[in-house]
Length: 146
Image 1: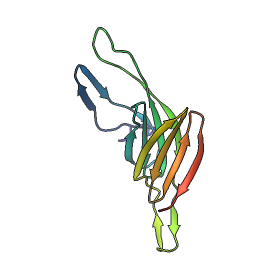
Image 2: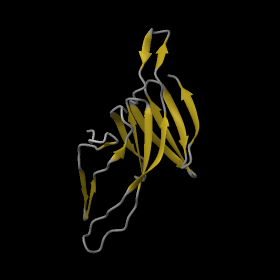
Image 3: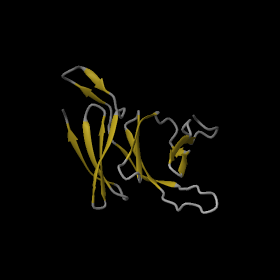
Image 4: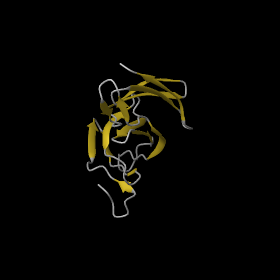
């Protein structure tokens, strides 16, 4: 959903989860560039501290979920998130053997176990790519073709 100024896109849903006494809400506004494709896949890491989403343009964005203390007066936990990493994972390509175009749309994102300060992320659009991401930038990317 585009805002009048065209710089922000807001997810159209409010997610509510309940677990015992803890009730949390997620309603996030994502900074997106105008003309970027729709979000095609979303995945939380195992610890729940990072959220990765991919779009139809082959861009993967990672958000760090903020941790906040439980409010004593309202018994609600409020947290803010911040951008962690954004990178181009896949580009449009042409498969000469099959004579067809390979879309850049991200179909799958999976988090791998954390190693030290690095996070490892698999993304796929038909080709599987392993990305080693840190706070500064994408450190290394590996290509696997199956």
